[in-house]
Amino acid sequence: MGYFDYSREPKSDIAFVDMKSFYASVECVKRGLHPLKTSLCVMSRAENSTGLILASSPMFKKIFGKSNVGRAYDLPFDIKTRKFSYYNARKQGLPTDSDYVRYIEDWAQVTLIVPPRMDEYIAVNMEIQRIFQNYGSPDDIYPYSIDEGFIDLTSSLNYFIPNKSLSRKDKLDMLSARIQRDIWRQTGIYSTVGMSNANPLLAKLALDNEAKHTPTMRANWSYQDVEEKVWAIPK
Image 1 (cartoon, rainbow, N blue to C red):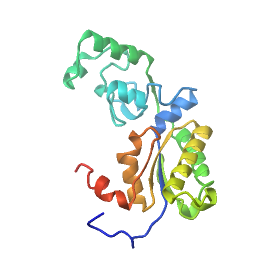
Image 2 (image 1 turned 60 degrees about the horizontal axis):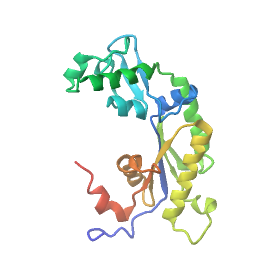
Image 3 (image 1 turned 90 degrees about the horizontal axis):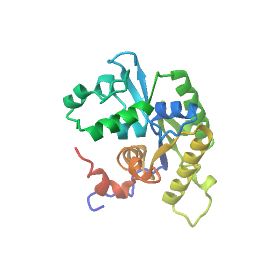
């Protein structure tokens, strides 16, 4: 904190909430499947090799090494036969040994490839927005996208957690954990929370750079963390 004095900067208590692999998680929950343990991909035009990957579950990403955006021909298996694609593998520099081929084909057989259902995603999003309204007024809720948004908890933090012996940082963490719990209990969706006792930007940076990698799926970045954490973000 040697370069800037943040003592006069505005302070607010922000929880920036992201639904983990939202579209894919909704599809898993609707099928009674665990959203973190199921290999599932939401794909449009899955009937051909140019099918667009719109979302995928964490397990799908782990097994096939793919992010949310891509094409069917980027996968190491044929989506129709579920057989290993040597052509795709070589094009992407993937192994082609028998153990890896068997590994991919075994997972391909149990992987679900489903079409998008926007009506379902919007309905679940509205349910999550109602959960947010239990913790803040409509004026304090800021949707960022269908699966992400932040809540300004500055005015409600002491109401929900009146314990005067706790710091605002501790209270924000406790209240964010409650929000995560409520979302999971009511929708089956896991969420990640970037927190800040400073401003929404730092909460968003905490979400994208740290919270997604912690056991609690929460992280707090405030003014005192700027030099150590913000300045360390790779360019």
